[in-house]
Length: 182
Image (tube, rainbow, N blue to C red):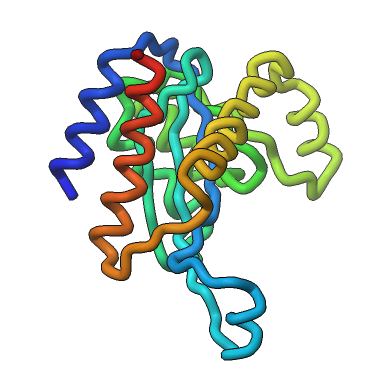
């Protein structure tokens, strides 16, 4: 897996990045079966949760995290921040990443977090209103990249083994970045 991560990191160096990075997760099915078949056999399809760090200028996928568990977004983000603190200046995230520990960790690593707060009080609404709307709006690039990956490569991975599933997703991200270069 380390080799594939190195290749992804090398592909990032080929593209211009501006340091403004969005973080978002998406689900990929682990097997492809028709809905009729899954209902008839009472089969459940497990999903992979894929969290992407995407540069907003070039839509470059900087890093990814893949898990089969139901980890909350706020538990996944710290490892991505620590691994990529040199490439990230501003981190854009939706309310799923609203966690004080993420904000603190980002600031300690020299990253400015722009993450919406979940609105439990009027103070949270005020904080959200003070966010730079133009900068926060660039977070939509993550949705674009997630959608593009699923349209181009499918919303599922066919491999049965975990390491092959990870490899397939990294190769999809790698080819996404290489397509930007060409």
